[in-house]
Length: 124
Image 1 (cartoon, rainbow, N blue to C red):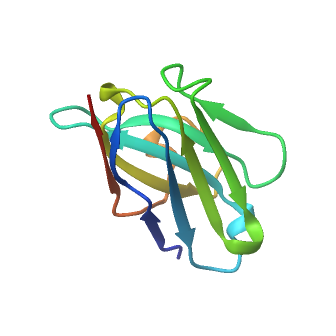
Image 2: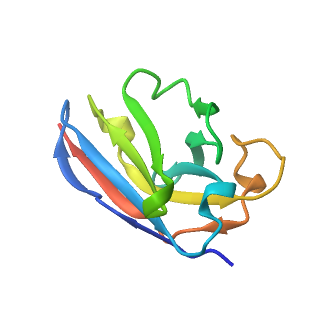
């Protein structure tokens, strides 16, 4: 069982930056692929970024490439999402998720565990 708690959301002006954190419980954090997803009002939950447990594999949605950076600190059981050049269309509830299987890292139905989410609001 893995519990995930997001933090770092808030209000930011367009063009600004924000860093989200997701703290995970459990002693096998490094074995999980961690993902970030977001859901805007009235829309489906969409993939944002993911990072594998071991070194080397990172995935980004086209809409955030070059602006967002996902990283992890296995010693702290934490995954981060650095968001730069924020746009109004980035406004959403951001959730982190964890998976311990070999299913696709960009599909939300691949993930076993989910956090509650944190709101990101971008003002124009």
